[in-house]
Length: 286
Image (cartoon, rainbow, N blue to C red):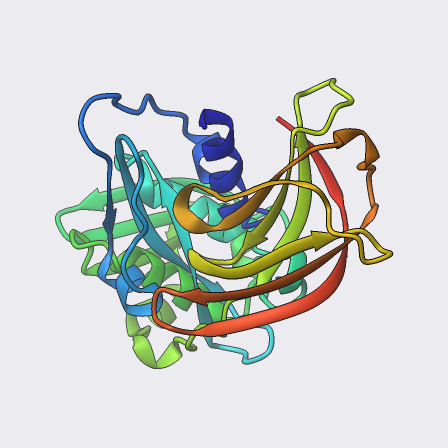
């Protein structure tokens, strides 16, 4: 269960959905029922947050700059168990982009090499200091993405942007950012299909069909390229973001093996989607 938790959050934070918890490991309390605390932005765009068995998780949104609609941003759901550094996690993941799986090429990247130098929270204003690379950006969506991502948190009313400690013109764009810049999420998507194994091991433990948000799986089958259903036990993952197959014969799975996935899901706000596509298997170690 702990391995699967790390995997899901890693994807939901990848390349993708693919990292937050792996960046900030925190001991999860073992006593009492678990809960997920969600921001208003998360609930607005993705509905009620899923549950966890133990500990307290936090659901929030990262707004990625759209490459299809310049100046616009697209909300994407993420989770972490570390409330203390949640703003830092959100901005670092935003800078890392989301150029993975079925979202490849859809989001405008920040200038290569852009780093977060620091976050200063003074009363209700957050000042975010970036490396000099951000100064090369002329894309308004990036500034809006930073501001909207941070302002979803209740203790943030204003966001100031700096480059190497100096105010940047992007700060003016960030100040004016509002909900008119936000695109509605598309229906759910299958993000990627991957196999997991222990580091250095040859044996595959499980196959994961990762979705871009928490979903209810109405139907999901994994098949070989000749149409034979892959034998094994199928179950739903933590955070409801993946269908996981425990294969009866792990030895047949190889890197870039074609896997056909037939699926039908619905998200927490009733958006439905389905697919019947072939994916090249990604093998990952943990």
